[in-house]
Amino acid sequence: MKRVLLAMLVMAGPAWAGPCDALGGHEMIRAELLFGRTHVSNAAWADYLRQSVTPRFPDGLTVLDGRGQWRNPAGGEISREASSVLIILAPAADDLKTRLKAVRQDYKTRFRQQSVGLVTSTACADF
Image 1 (tube, rainbow, N blue to C red):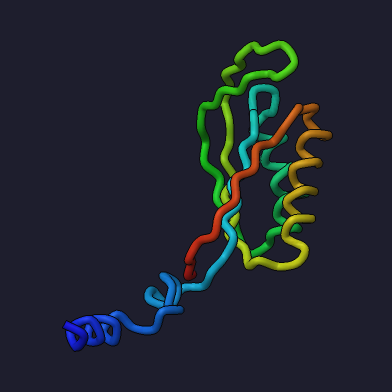
Image 2: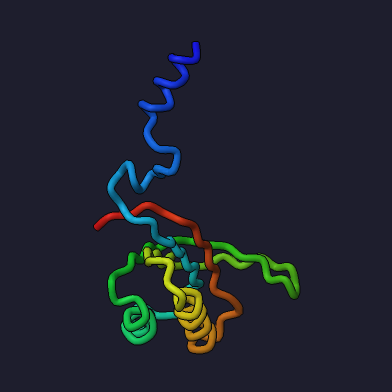
């Protein structure tokens, strides 16, 4: 029994090998930003991406169109609106939090929005 268990451990590979090691990718941070777009034209959105997001994340990004809903904490009413999801994959650099915060704040200020959602996770990515 001990030999079978030992053989299984050896075949499984090193204990520190994660999915990125097995798949040949790189561990990165996946940031998904959620933008309400009801009062933001396509032209204004394109300008925002070009002026605010691309300089901070020049290596690339993905934009998905969607429909979202959000409850206003002040009054409790639910708003439904067109939305965009911005997906950014980036190395876990010291300035990543600062760049994401600046992108969110710029959108809120520029378009008078109450919030921009942010969801982060670690991902294995390769390009």
